Length: 131
Image 1: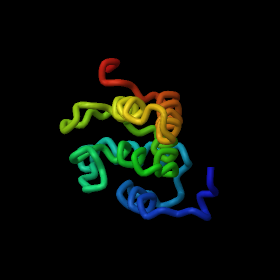
Image 2: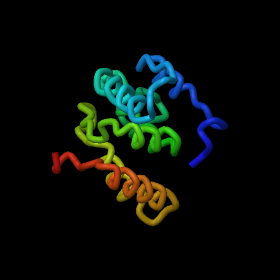
Image 3: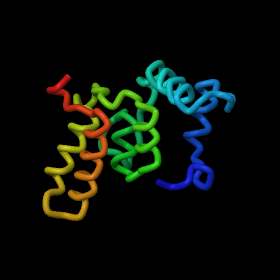
Image 4: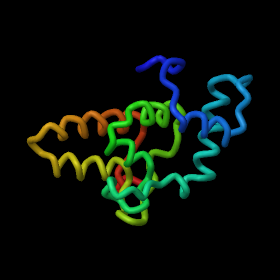
């Protein structure tokens, strides 16, 4: 994992601000506040880019599709909900990844999607059928 002090992303600043963190909290308390903010705003954390194949899709799916490892690692560390079902495609992030593993069978992207599947599965992500 990259050193967080060297790699700072705007999304982290936005989550810190939205969660009203002042830096005096323990890491566990920071993670809880961010997780609470995520839950309260989960329906707003969607992406509607023409470079993304899910209309108003969960930002975790977008992070997977753009290989945004830092965001995925932070989401796992914050222990946010990894099991949101998007109304537009009726899938969780794990369902989305499984679909893409099959879609890219035999090419270079298959391995990338398998990596994200393992990472998110170990963090508690589930298929819609498991919820």
